Length: 203
Image 1 (cartoon, one colour):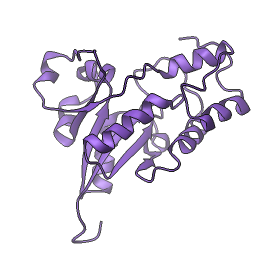
Image 2 (cartoon, rainbow, N blue to C red):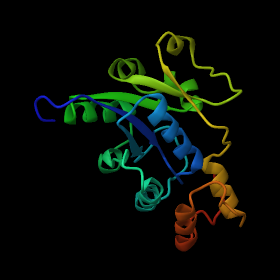
Image 3 (cartoon, rainbow, N blue to C red):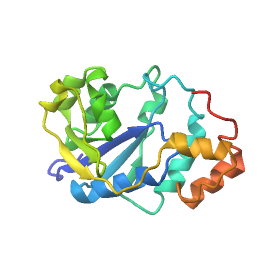
Image 4 (tube, helix red, strand yellow):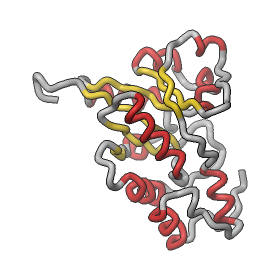
């Protein structure tokens, strides 16, 4: 960043995005408003260390993200974890982003499931010292993080009532069911054209 440039406030939104769906987009839009963000940085995972399932090849996940994010200039796709070898650890990603963009204030945007398991993440205490933590607040659901995580402050992002998961989308495609209410139309078209998710998931 050039000398004298204003600080930017960017949220890191990581995940497999296999596929990206409407609840992902709703959360990111809510975060833009609730956290007064300049940008949401979408970071598709390369090799998520906690997932046993083999991910759809990155070329497809990236293509679907590009379709879903088009039209919102504050949504930016970052391939940082796809080009880095080895397991995808959020701590490594944050270190790399902070080094590349030292004048940026970084927020880590996570869902309640991730919040509940945050104490299992590699270097989570160091991670929370480097970012502002923002947690999606799903209506009617009480977050249940580990006690040691609760001691760290976090922001809340109100999340619209959308009960959608990527595993649901994959299962519906495998069953030949309609997914038009779960993903953007462009993503649904891409999945159909490339024959993605037709085989039932093994895990």
